[in-house]
Amino acid sequence: MIYPYVCDNCANKFEVIKSVKAIDDHETCPTCKCAATRTIAVNQMFHGANDWNTAHYNHALGMHVRSNKEAQRIARERGMIEIGNESVEKIHKSFDSDRDKRLSYDI
Image (cartoon, rainbow, N blue to C red; front, side):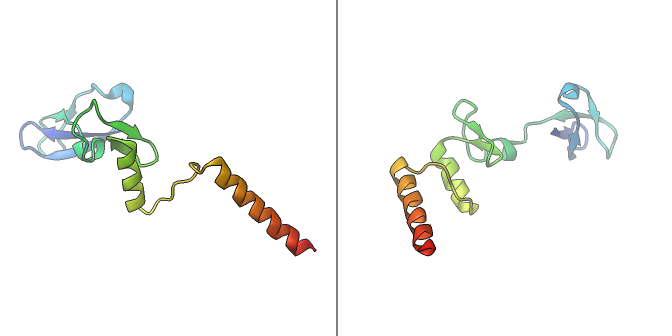
């Protein structure tokens, strides 16, 4: 995991890659070698969500979002295409159309 830190002495911001088991290990600033405090990466965690209670993690987007509608909006902005939410009737119609096309080529 990547954890963000800020130096208590010089306010240098840096990130440390370490395992979840080592999350409570103390880190020192690479610049001044003083103690550093782990912070929350707000830009990675919330992306506009106002509250921990209202945000949920969307694995496809790799971030926390407030609602499914927000996730859909962000996905569209990123050029992602949503699949798997078609109605059964639409799926059957598509398969029937494809089958009819294949049959017309065979004749």
